[in-house]
Length: 189
Image 1 (cartoon, rainbow, N blue to C red):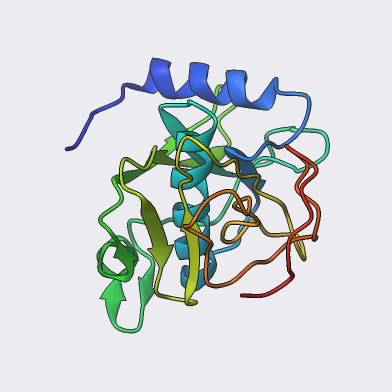
Image 2 (image 1 turned 30 degrees about the vertical axis):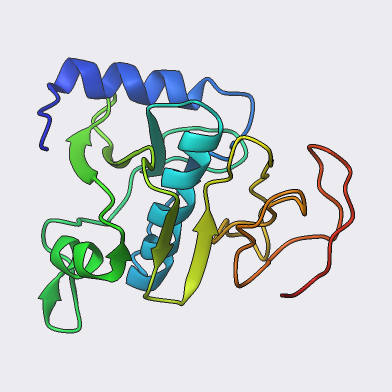
């Protein structure tokens, strides 16, 4: 499902995302990072975070400074980036399961700086993962809650699914206390 976005829409979306007070579970800012496995982790995490938080999409934005949210431009061009002798987008599509709908948009911000927005559709399945790094994330059932957390400057994978649920992720990457319900859980499964 490909949705075209015109330049006006993309520039308006960029302004809206930059106006957020900080990065969120469903919005991340980068400058030039083109590490394909890391992008795969973000696709998985953003799809799940968007679903958990009731958002239609999650976004990874290149060319925006983390703290000030100033547009600084990027040299990252997903349309010409290759990983392991494959086009980046093709490689990413092969490494996510179940299929996650995402789209890269390369455009110039209002001031002419090059910007890339990766728009990731919210997960509609019970589990999305990036096989690129073997990190999985679960979309919880109604009787559980989940919180995405950053670790080492990245938000890869799901940090928690409360013990009231039977769908614990295989790899837990965050603290042992759920910030949504304060339930204490083991640090590994």
